[in-house]
Length: 209
Ligand code: ASP
Image (cartoon, rainbow, N blue to C red; front, side):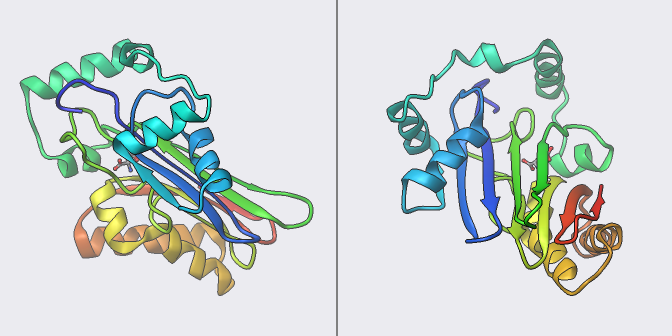
């Protein structure tokens, strides 16, 4: 973030029981999706944020690392560049910069689906800024009646249109995965001008990126 600290967002969801867990603006943990899974499995909540999320991780045996252990040389260079030349987040995304999100979608032989998304968000973001990634229906969605979806891109656009849920609904209606992703992203571009991407697998195992 702009103060030079690590803040991470992550989410996980499974499609049989629609169970989900997320962490927003959590401190430096090595595997934020694993903490999101702990939220899903060990709490009655879907999303923990900030210090509460970091404390929850610590209390559940997850190591909180020194920030710099999670910062690569490239990320540091990008951070310094952005401090020197501040620009809007949307501009960065629309030029293909600032993307660092990792997504995963899966289906097993019984047709059960799951999705997860993990990100450092964007370099030099405002302290406390949370993107789409930990938000169910925006950064990911999983539903055995539809498929599993994980998104990346301009969070402030993705969350306003619930892109993962939109794609999921299209899959539920039988749309081919590539068309479902392309249509939702084109609509986002048209309506709010933001760029993004998505990966998905539908309930029959067809995948698209
Ligand atoms: N969607 C993420 C965010 O806005 C960033 C990314 O996908 O690279 O935080």
